Length: 260
Image (cartoon, rainbow, N blue to C red; front, side, top):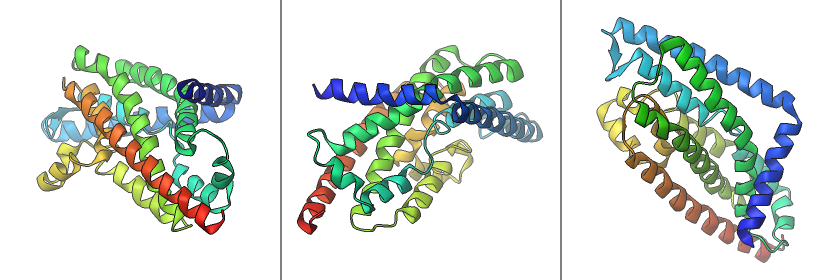
């Protein structure tokens, strides 16, 4: 019964996105532009560095960017801030009256909203890369990349809910949102492969959940056949889901004690 409720929430959210194509089209335009610009910059950097940067060729870096951006562009970038506002203005307190878990329904709804974007980003990114730099460096790794993108989106959505739960105690989530996004950008590998970072920083980054949100799909798409990355992503989804559920329950108890 719970699974059906989550499926309905996700499906309804996806249908709303498809029914309002304007924002949908803008999002795809932004994605295409970002992939084209960053891909071109990385190709130039690779060419100026003897053909590769940190072991990635220019073509591999273009495929990397297409995947890492496909894992982040579909997301609502201000989700943490919006969740914080909903906690602060009492919307979440009202949702607590429903029999279903607030956090699971919200996660399902948000993932459903990203699905149409995910499908088009993967299709558009694949087409752009194929036209500009040719076939993916490794067919087997590239075949795993769409699944890694989907897992990255799920990990990010769950992670944002875990971070947003701080708003039960601190009503302003803006600083939390800002810090979270910067982690995804840099140590999550959204803008550049982690191998480009200083060695110590790259080692630490690979132990953080943010690597599952952008680096993992980028790494696979760039030609590195490392299926274990999918297991790492799945593990982080479970871990962050546990944290999000636990902190939301604690926050909900706090609201009950304070009278909503």
